[in-house]
Every structure is written in C-alpha cells, then in structure tokens.
Amino acid sequence: MIEAFRAAILHGGISAGADALGIPQPSMSRVIAELQKAVGFALFLKHGRTIKPTAEALALMAKVQQSFMGLEEISRFSEQLRKQRMGRLSICTIPSVGHSVMPEIIEQLRAEYPDVMVSMRIASYMEVWRNVRNRQADIGITADILSAGELETVAEFSGECVCIGTSRWLDAGASHVELEELATRPFIGLTDTFQRQMDGLMSAHGLQLDPVVEVSASHSASELVLRGMGISVVDPLTGRRHRELGGVTLPLRPSFRYSVYATAMADTRLGEPARALLGQLTKAIGKARTHAGGE
Image (tube, rainbow, N blue to C red; front, side):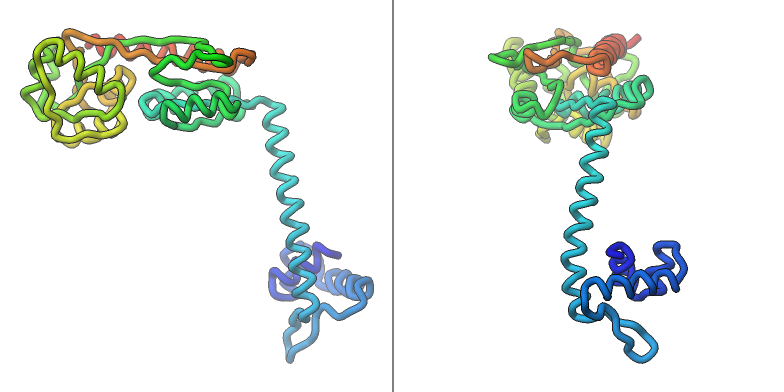
C-alpha cells in the first residue's frame, strides 16, 4: 500500500502510478482505497477531471520518503558488504604512479580477479601515509619510505629518471641527454622533493636550472612538454607514458634513480590481489627501465 501511494504521488496520479508499478489501474485504486481506510483520512480528491493529493497525503509522503531513503541506504550498504565478501583492494598512490601505470595495472588486475572491487585514490605523500595509517587503504605507494611504527615497506621498485621532450627540443635518435643540455633549453620544473634532488645533482656538477614553468606533478610536466614548451626530467614511469603519447624520452647522463615504495600496516596480511598488484608494478618498472634505455 505504501509503495502504491508513493508511486501515485511521484508520478502525478493513480493511473500514472499504476503504469510505473506495472499493475492494472483498478488494482491500484483498490490498494489506495485500502490505505485510506487504514489511515482514516482521504489521500486523494477529485479536482475536475484530475485527482490531486490532499495536504495530509503530502505530509504523509514526507515520512514515506524518509523510510524509502533508509531502505535505499540499506540496499547500498548490503551491496558494499557483498563486494567486501567477494574481495576489495584499496590503493592510495602518489600522482607519478597513479597517472602513469596504475590504470593499466588495475585493468590487468580486474581481468585476473573479476570479483574484486578495486578502489584507487591519488594523493600527496602525507595523505598516502594517513590513508594507510587509518586503514583507509590496504596499500600505499610513495616515493619515500613510510616504514615507521605500525607501517612497513612491503616492496621497493627502482629505475632511472629520464629526460622528456618533443622533436623540437630533443633528438629522438640520441643515445642520452647530458646535464649541460638541461641548462640550455626551456625547462619545465617540478615543485616537490624530486626537483630538490634534481637541483642537487645539477649543483654538484656546477650547473643550475632556470625553469620557465614549475608544476606540482610529473604528468602535468609531460603535458606541457608535449605542447612544445620545453624539456623536463621525470620518473621512468611518467617517461614511459610520455613516449606512448608521442613524446621523446631519453636517458639522462649522469643519471639518478627514482624509487617507489609500497607500504602497508605491519599486521596486514596481503591477499592474492594485493600481491598480484605488486607483481604488476614490478613488471611496469621493468618495462620503464627498458624504455629508458632506448631499446
């Protein structure tokens, strides 16, 4: 009766409500009549050739909607529990990994474990730490070691950073890029720890960068470089993605390494999907190493 009443209100009449529920109009009228008898007051009155809800019906509808919202919430929660029972893997990662290889890794993971619900959040280093620490993420991926207290590093991946550009600024046939070349071409810099390491490497060789643009994420640097604005130095994963998008990627000499760390709570037992994800990340780093070597 309540469902029929709600349908009649939402769809603007008893006939329309009956159509929405897929029941005959006479059956709908009979159910509404039984509900009016149960509540003890009229719910609908004729106005010319139409039927409109009474003020009492509209007040009742407000309570009915609250109940149905509760039922919908229960339904959503039940679905979440069902997916958790089948399996769930939550990942929190820094942008350099999240924007480069993680979509491909998740696609492969879902193909191997179709019943596992995968969620990914791209965040800063400190947000990754908080998400893992608060158990909002099963695995955190950063470029810094998070092992401290209840956190532990469960995997480490390393590769050489690369110089990215377009044919306007880089020779795709070159074997590598020397540090000196970075100081003579428009440079897209980063604003994080990575850039401080890059500045330290330049300073150790008596060189200095003069960025024309600074951005906070490596994928943004790649986007600007692809627009012909200059060159940049990024992690190997972003470098691989840059070449896939049509850019030029070359090894940097002398080089410096970029490490990625996977972190989890010390008492967390990583299931098969989590271990598979780490395996896929290992393969992605391996491809990036080959890619950076120009093979």
